[in-house]
Image 1 (cartoon, rainbow, N blue to C red):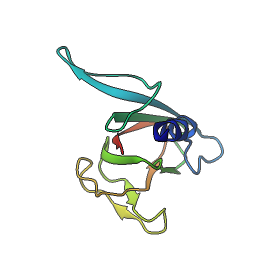
Image 2 (image 1 turned 90 degrees about the vertical axis):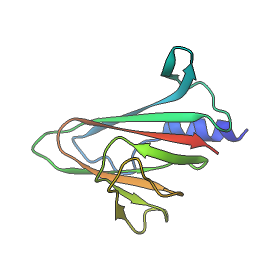
Image 3 (image 1 turned 180 degrees about the vertical axis):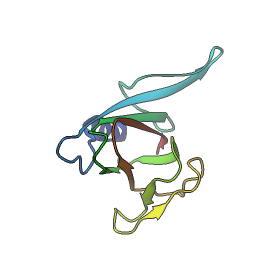
Length: 129
């Protein structure tokens, strides 16, 4: 049952603030591993222990600077993000810290925040708890 909540939260997840003139989309995948290596496939359901990959893309005028804030769905524990230097919160977005190493996230991240000018992409890997 819990994976249903996580899946619906991920599929419905949109950043907390996508400003005017900006379009943000997200896609959710399951990471699989086997004899042919590691690959991702579109998510249909989750199970405890699955690795989830979320990819967010945005389009915005290059001359503008936007701030994107995205909540991490309850039930996911972040493992890594695709870029250094973004901000993270472990208290629901009340206080923020800058992430020096995208592979070294603290436990309990609840929100991510980054600045966007122009088109871009950010992804993160998380484990279903």
